[in-house]
Length: 332
Ligand code: CP
Image (cartoon, rainbow, N blue to C red; front, side):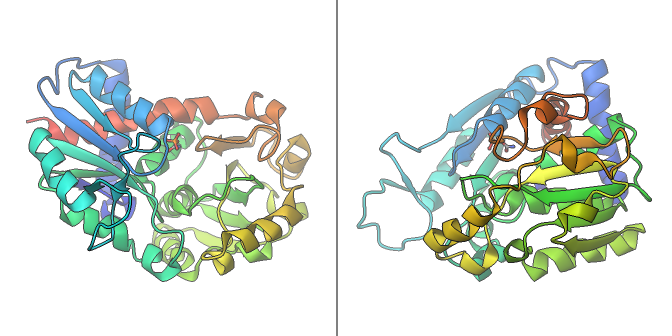
């Protein structure tokens, strides 16, 4: 495997292989499998779980991780300018090949511009960075994707016996004061579509996902025997749901105007998932969130820490599925 950029780039047997291998590496550790191998992470947006889970994954296989996280260090990284006459010191197009010279693989987090929706829907920045890499690449979250997160959620659903075809998943937008890109939501949506689930996207009207993301998921769902619909109706969306993926994303109509977006967002402060939301769902409906989550703002604390929650399970599964990806990418 040379690239791990988008679950859509993998066949169902390849995904099943990664899920099976992640389970195998959990049960039967191989602490020397990647001895001598180096992974460098270039994180152009803040991260906690991705850095930690990748460090743990590489460490448990005997490899080494280098973390490049410029935020706040004074050594900000330029990704687009052709003439560097601002405060940035490094350009990604020089940094990526040089980091590649030290590494057997690179993981890059590049959340996009938050200015130009069309460019971000085309993964313009991320694609440019990938092309600069001389070694295999892992997507650590881009403007519209987060395949490691999607695969971890898939494993959590398998572990919890949540059905594929016929299983009902709600991708629920929640209020958070932060404005998040589409990556985690789009990855959860596409994962459920590939799984052949019946997916309902619950969101206020202004938060309808961009059409290309929806159309891509609808195509995948129909090929796998599922479907994707959208609604703004909180009262009915959870009907017979087996699992809820709670996420927050920015309103596409205000992508280039985050101040305006903030005023729209404030109307939906009551979109915090608490136990009452689950009344129409199946009794043991589960909750997944990619983290970080604003406790009491996006999801109520008793739900996050209650029996429905697969939040910590999924955080651990991030490590396990990344071990499988790294193993297939780097083990000779
Ligand atoms: N889920 C996830 O990617 O978390 P971080 O933003 O903390 O890395």
